[in-house]
Image (cartoon, rainbow, N blue to C red; front, top):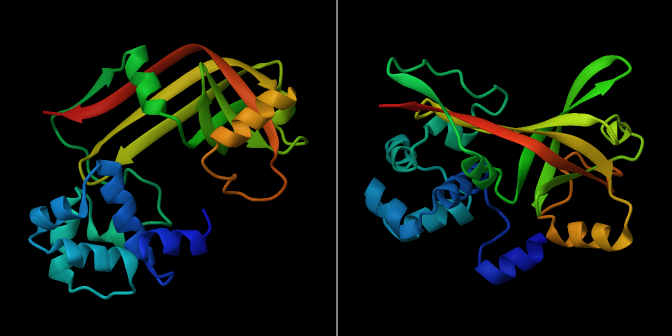
Length: 225
């Protein structure tokens, strides 16, 4: 969806800040409405909507309450941590690592997101972040036809996706291992193009679809009691 159609459908102006985008993304990730965030933070739903849709400079105490309501931090909401890797918080003493079932792993893979594909190259093993989509029992992503990931067709590769919650010191990871193949059937390519939720974030000529058929899926989650 382009910005013009987005503004027309939501009534929101195009002047949203990074704060607004991050606030909306976190709220939607948690499955919360603006009213629910407002109730949790002691703010009106209209104020939450305003922060999401307009340029705004809220007071720090308001930001703290909203961040708490969303189970995150002010630094995360304002983008202060974008240049740093996740997981810099101190581990909790009662943390535990538990194994996930295959059904849980497949649910967490969901339908799309950003993951990492690990392949062997002439220079040794390499890992590349990719936008992916779950298509049936397979995992598909787009790359350049000349890229190292494309040259891994016919070999066993690993695909990993994870989520880190710095505020709660929790997270999970899922790894799928299987054979990679290039998708050359025109009808299959059209189906993947239709199922993809966005173009590759890296831009450029990344129109060559690769598919991984997992033979093994495992996962782990960090929890605390």
